[in-house]
Image 1 (cartoon, helix red, strand yellow):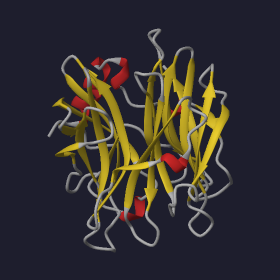
Image 2 (cartoon, one colour; image 1 turned 30 degrees about the vertical axis):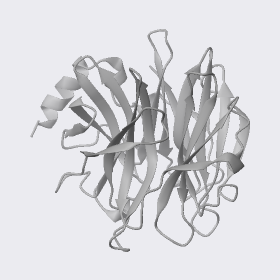
Image 3 (cartoon, one colour; image 1 turned 60 degrees about the vertical axis):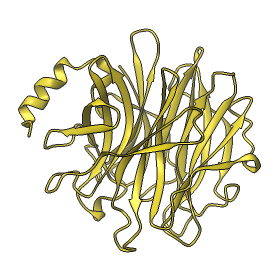
Length: 309
């Protein structure tokens, strides 16, 4: 195993896009809907379109008070101050809760939104998609299931990258064989020619026994480099750390097989449960990039933060 000292030395030589977040350099982009544990805003997905950034994210209240009750789509010219274009509720999606959305601008000028939806009365999750002419006019009535999972598998929180005419997807997979162990997760990899019909290629990243990410891993952001693939991922060591995952770094020669680096998280909050999760990276096209991620506050709520680098 690579030592922590070797990982830290390697981080210095990585391209900017592969380096983990530095939360002390971040600012609040979207505030949570309330104060205290369970009041969270985050699970962001961001895309640059022209001179604007479009951001979509999940709003959540505590269990019993709504859980993931809505996603919002917002627009910004400076990457920090956003105007909400549209909100989509869990009722519109016939879901018990919503988790990470993904916003994609399509080659034909249209937009596509992917939503992670909890199936009522179960631990099952699915991913649905819908399209619109602009990122503020999605109609949930037009949605279709694109990642259904099954009775033994929940699928959610996709990361999607289009490259060289192929769609690449990394999704969080939760086994449902034991109802008391459904927080376990691995990341599986899939490809598609249209972003709707997917072919699965197996596990791309799994937790490591005895390490800080042993209970589960969820890829949150992926960048292709000349030498392969670099990914940021969320990890946890126990069920008690559910919702407070920290960020790790993984690499691979290709997108289907990633290896976690180091024996410590690459980034975490200095407050509360130390959660820093769901990193999304936007290339600004001028030698800089913006990160968006969910960060734990001291009072247990979660901000949606942005970091310019």
